Amino acid sequence: MKKECKRCLFTSDFSVLNDKQCNYCDLHDELQKQANPDGLHDMLNKIREHGYGDKYDCIMGISGGLDSSTLLYTAVRYWGLKPLVIHFDNNWNAPEAVHNMQQLIKKLNVDAITYQVNKAEYDKLNESFLYAGLPDADIPNDIAMTKLMYDTAHKYKIKYILNGHDFRTEGSTPAAWTYMDAKYIRSVYKAYTQSELTNYPLFTFKDQLFYAWKGIKNVRPFHYGFDRDTMELEMKRLISWQDYGGKHCENVYTEFVGSYLLPNKFGIDKRIVYLSAQVRSGRLTKQQARELFDDKAQFDMSKFGDYLPKVEALINIRKGDRAKYDKYNFKAYRPLIWILVKLKVVPYTFYTKYCK
Image (cartoon, rainbow, N blue to C red; front, side):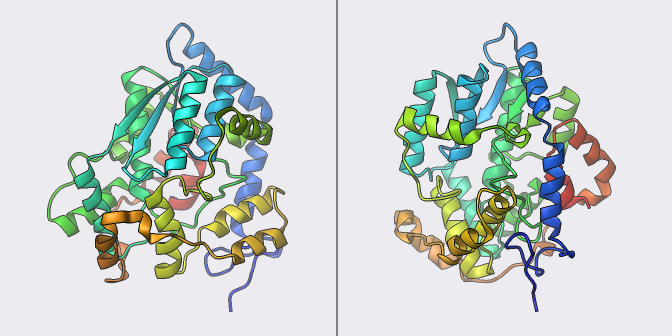
């Protein structure tokens, strides 16, 4: 019989419980201890110093979601940074997110580059994961965005990438629920299409080593802790913020995976990760989080339009097994990946998820 963490909503079927809390609460506390506010000041000074006299001093991704939008607003209005903004357009942006992005870029007067995905190849990639029956159907978006930000940083000789992840509101997803690996993505695609994935941007282990050598750092300013709530309110007023429906719903395909595919096919509801993170950080009580979690997520399948028949034909074929596909053995590279963590190429949470 599964047991629940005394502190958050996590249960013993996907976390390790001790007398006080679960291992993800332990990770939260460890990250909180690392969150020295003076570290933010030092990091910002390094970014400004390295980018002094240049047109840009950092790279930032934007999705039209709350975290990336708040970070961009804060970086420009409060920290005086000069970001070059990157957007990965997979053809499934929610219209509200498009409004948010366009207005924020305009109001802040920042330069932005949009990478338009090859639709035919991207559709085949999505179909590959649906046909294989794997829960990692939205992971190609994250790994592509990472690749584009590092490549752009290298092209423009920028040493810092600012990442909008916040462990206090997003937490860390159990490894059994999500697996991110460029080699794995290629393997799934090839099994379905009998061809190589050629145009899609994938951040490989080789890329990680190359960009570590180049000294490009991926930093998470929210981890240092500051009054982000004030910045959120100001940003929303500035651009007449449009709500897109909830965490990670700024993209229709990502919303489908999180709100429909994972809960209905795999019994995975990632909202428990985000809600538990907010319980740990004191933004919600455990009871408030439980009530929000009990209000089940919904997804309007008509958002797929003409693509709906293809999705419906693939989603119930099978439940797959990751073991069938090629993957990196990250544990074999644990000492090297720890060095990459220290160089701020790889996040600490990646190390705890895949190397321990």
